[in-house]
Structure formats: C-alpha cells, structure tokens
Length: 336
Image (cartoon, rainbow, N blue to C red; front, side, top):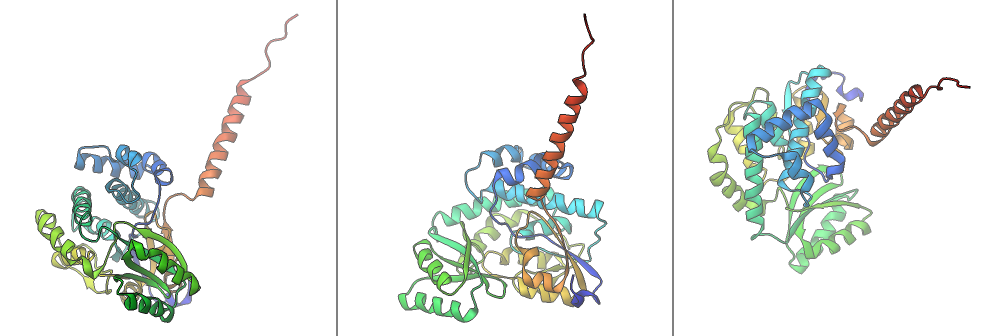
C-alpha cells in the first residue's frame, strides 16, 4: 500500500493479459477449484467439447485451448474475489486478453458468448497469421530506457528492418513486434543497453500493421454478437479512456488488434476515477507486480495458488496420511 492511494476509496477489478504458462501450472486449478469447475462446465457446454481435455493435449503455448483455460481461470478467480473477499468494484479494466473477461464480468456479453467469441477469434488470428506477418513475434523486455531503445530502433531503421510498437507497460518496459530473423539483433541490443528480455509471443499482438486482422475479425466474428452496455465503467487499454456503452466496448475489443496497449495511461485513468484498490483477478505474473501498479494502488492479487502454498498443502496432506496410516496400524492381540 502507498500513501498516494489513501484519498481514493474506489475499487477496480482488473483482468490481466495472458502470459506463458503450461498445463502443469494451471490444469490442477481448473480441475479442483470449485469456482473454476463451474466456469469450465459453462465453457464446455458453450463449445460442445471438453476444454480441459483439449488444453491438456495442446502443444502450442498460446493455443485456443490455453486461451480458453486462461479465460475460465480469470472468471473463476473474479467469482472467488466477489464471493469470499467481498470485492465490490466500481470500475473494470482488462489490458490485452483481459478485455474478454471484462466483457463477461460487466455483462456486456454473456460468459458463454465470450467463450465462443474467444474460440472464433483464435481461429481468425490463426488464419490471418498463417499468411500475413507469419514470421513476426511480439517481444517483451524490461529495464530498457527510452533513449537506449531509440538507439536500437535507429539501427533497425538504418537497415530498413520492419518493427512496430505493441505496448508500453511501465518505465523501461516495452512490447515490440519484429520479424523473427531480427529477434537476435533486438535481444543483443537490449542486453547491451542493460535491459532484460522476458519472452516472445506468437502470434504477435497489438500492432498498427495488423489493421487487416481487425477488419477480418469485425467482418467474420463480431457481427454475430450483440454487446450490451457494461454494468461498470471500463477503462480502455490503449489510451485510458472510459467507456460506458456497448458501442465503446465493441470499439475497444476491435482496437486491441491494431492499437498498442498503454498500462500507464490506464493507471492514470483509474486514479482519476478515484480508484485506490486494484484487485487483479487471473493467472497474472505481470500487471500486479509492475512498479507503476504498486506505487499507485493498494494491490490485491487474486491468482492461482503459489507453488510454495501448493507444496505446503501437499506436505500437510502427506502428514495427515501418515498419521492416519499410523493410527490404523495398532498392535495385534498378544498370543502365546
């Protein structure tokens, strides 16, 4: 908690964007958590197949089934936050993929519709990136000051190499889309600047060059869905504006294809709306940890159980099991 949030009494719920994760990390939660099981059953019914089974067998990091599992877990953790922690948000925000859970949580779309929309958009993106920009990745990196990044990009310009901005998350924290053949040059430049490369995403995201993908999604997917006005104000992820109607939600969800995300702008907007507590609900390893987030809000992260917590739970279970077995092995009757 910081003193800067003391005068702001509002609470926002924020659904995070996706990060890399494996079935081993999130599958157990999907199967065992009661909130996740309810949402998973809804997703299965909406799609007509088992999301859990297909996610377990998926080989790609950002497959449609991983996206669906991430959505299910994000909604389940929001359900838990509302039911068990008494969270009563006045504002909602969802950077990047988090927009989808935002649409469901605010009632702009039903959860089954968001599940179907997610699957259809994943197909749409797969088709688009199998042709245009199929060799492009979005690279995430930190601790790289703007002036040093400008030097790196000047080198790209000198070589005539393509790049596009995909996001700004914090001071020195950037998302940049580049052709895969330029990735080694980019990461070397980041290291030389004292920065640190985190991970690369395929398919790439949030770049102005992907305007054709936006049009494809609008024509082939969004036309089948009728959005409603959100029950809460929603902060847009690329410029921090606030939307309160269905048209604004639709535009926001289309903008995600060709507008880079800007988390600092979202933070400023949330502050202007009187938000002092930010509840991040979802399998997040990023947004609740950012310096700009921690400096401006009391942060409540409602995420997947931590590894240490899971280990403690396993150890307690083993101890209970040992105690039970010991209790059952009593001395037999004495015989002559």
